[in-house]
Amino acid sequence: MRIYLIGFMGVGKTHWGKILSNKLGLPFYDLDELIIEQEGRSINQIFEEDGEEFFRTKERDILREFSEENESMLLSCGGGAPCFFNNINFMNEMGVTVWINTPFEILLGRLRQGKEKRPLLKDLSDEQLRAYIVKKNADRRMYYEQAKVIVEDRVIEIEKLIKQILHA
Image 1 (cartoon, rainbow, N blue to C red):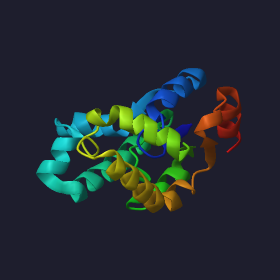
Image 2 (image 1 turned 135 degrees about the horizontal axis):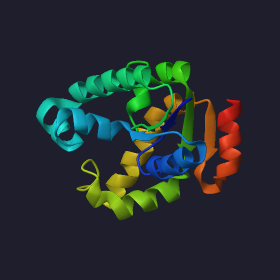
Image 3 (image 1 turned 120 degrees about the vertical axis):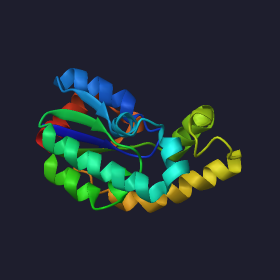
Image 4 (image 1 turned 90 degrees about the vertical axis):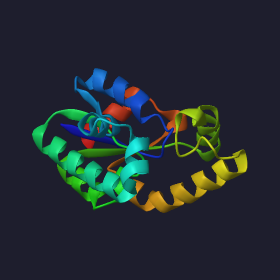
């Protein structure tokens, strides 16, 4: 079984991914970490040195290659991963996509607290951060909504989520 966790940055894909992988007995991977490992540099460096188009192409290639090589896995995907190169369709064909949909105010609070760790956010004022989240989430929502399982972050019950995934 292949499970792909999708959603905006800060929704807890890594947190929930580790819990789910443990409960389901699936190895956990992070798509951004796979890219970092293959490239030998950070996501921030890739964006700065080669631009977003290069990063998105690399992301697509690793997503497809890794998925085809691994029949059992739980993969946490970067927030933009489903939105390029028909990646959402690919993930839906290969396995179960799970969108973790976090309410705006909770997401804003999490990203405000951790923005120093996120290169795209660290220099934004609170007002700019709010605008960034609203815009990016609106742009990506149409892709996220194509997930086979949609989970509201405020009320995640792990056993219920596992049942939803297994029935998807």
